[in-house]
Length: 202
Ligand code: IDP
Ligand code: MG
Image 1 (cartoon, rainbow, N blue to C red):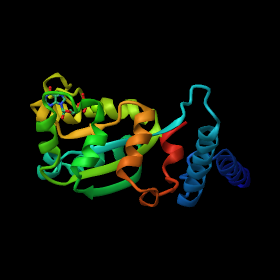
Image 2 (cartoon, helix red, strand yellow):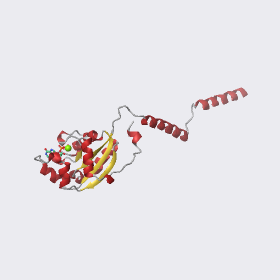
Image 3 (spheres, rainbow, N blue to C red):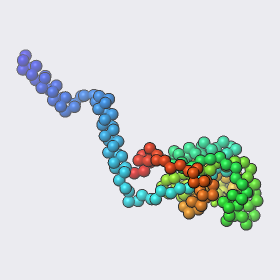
Image 4 (tube, helix red, strand yellow):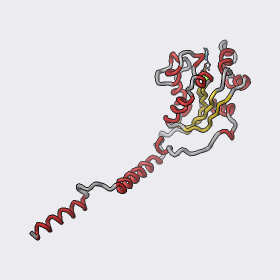
């Protein structure tokens, strides 16, 4: 009888030591999760050899996008992708500003139509920052002609003709900086660190 009790106690002790059959208390589980998260974050902070430079791009929702209630949808796509919003405003453009912004297109036959389209209502100006933001921004917008844009892109999902193609995106990092300077004053841009940074980048 005594021996049986000793045996039972020994088995129970062994089970505790090995953790067999034990339900992990919530606090221990949360500590373990937190330790593994910390490990993840430590790995995440290690610089990657293929890491590209952070870049800013100028994205603008044109008057048709604003009128059609697509501001939230477009903002959300960039936010969900992981890009960081650095500047945002609704703005009524002037002809002078548009002539500067589209300076390479002023001689085009369609320029007067483009001008009146862009002057027809407010636009939504945005600066997004992140890795390869210019190229990825153009990819998210889709082709200039919506009928050549892939479904899943903004133009491919929400527009049909080139003269109402919803959005603008800078075509090079150099032009992005020029456009940001054209559409925003320096004090309209916010310097802030995203708490999601280590969960978006490795
Ligand atoms: P992008 O906006 O994709 O960079 P761009 O060639 O820079 O394309 O042209 C600027 C904008 O001018 C276009 O987004 C579109 O609104 C307008 N546009 C371009 N080509 C045409 C055209 O052939 N007909 C009418 N509008 C055009
Ligand atoms: Mg362009």
